[in-house]
Length: 421
Ligand SMILES: Cc1cc2nc3c(=O)[nH]c(=O)nc-3n(C[C@H](O)[C@H](O)[C@H](O)COP(=O)(O)O)c2cc1C
Image (cartoon, rainbow, N blue to C red; front, top):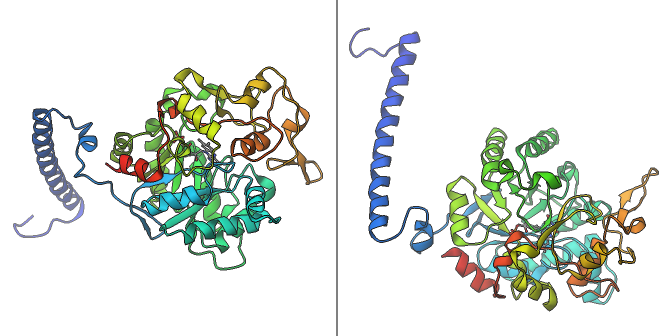
């Protein structure tokens, strides 16, 4: 090869390879040098690179971009049913720059009571999303669980028609979500599945791609979360199922299907936790328990107090007796309904029917908690009761493992300030 002539063929490929390698190594050396100086500087002032983000208020979290929308603070307040995340909580979070999420669970009953007239699940989702959007925040969405099969489609349509920025959907794989067509245009609402494994996300992506859609983001929820858990009971403590260990493979799937953002959930409590997961490659975090214990949450006073008083040993995963949805469900031991169910004292009422499954004739008539008092408790009535709705049944308190760290009820503003800095 003559000097000045561009290399060709096999020789050319190697020449390019070595050029890239040279630049890569030089970049690496500079990066390590800067990191080394930074680290020794931090040590000198008594910090470390691990808690650097915690100590320095100068470093701000990057914003979270979903379907062209910029969420200033990459904190998603997790949807919490029944009646915990209604429009006052979602709007308060949105006003602080985060993404506020309403829960669709039992919303028709709660909105009907508030309005003093009966509304259906379409109208309830429409009303709640509209109110949250009118309350001055930037971005609000709704959580609609697949397990709420009877009302699923109508809730999705109501939310999209009201202009929800996002729909987040889990407690089952939301395979049919992109196929639901609202009466108005649907282009602006981002669709976000909740998964607990890379395999589940792959299944969702493949199914959605057949419908001409990709997830706009995905929530990866680990085993420390509150509510229903996407793991078998004996998989909850596995090292491979720790959130940080699930993240790399889930990110690979997202990269393969359009490089959409991954939002991690389950056990995230502090500013340091958020910084740690952002450094690992997450684009945002979803938090439930911290927002459960805020002034704006719809939980009853008794429920919030149970969270504040909870100790580590009080955080249990109920499965027998458990949720009629068939998924492990994290509860606070002192929940009156759980305590009665453990003693097999609970008398089933089960008159709400949100988690009804289809019978062989295709009608929504079957709920395990209706027939079987030994193995199931009624989450519809228990959770409605926890939000102060009179159900004639005892309350049921769900929360994430971190409930035992919560020592006071904060306003959303104070909580967001604590998390941001
Ligand atoms: C009281 C409560 C109710 C919840 N309800 C729902 C729900 O209706 N749908 C859902 O997908 N997740 C639900 N979750 C899960 C949260 O949205 C969130 O992902 C989870 O709590 C994150 O874990 P953390 O509580 O450790 O922050 C609930 C969690 C709590 C604490």
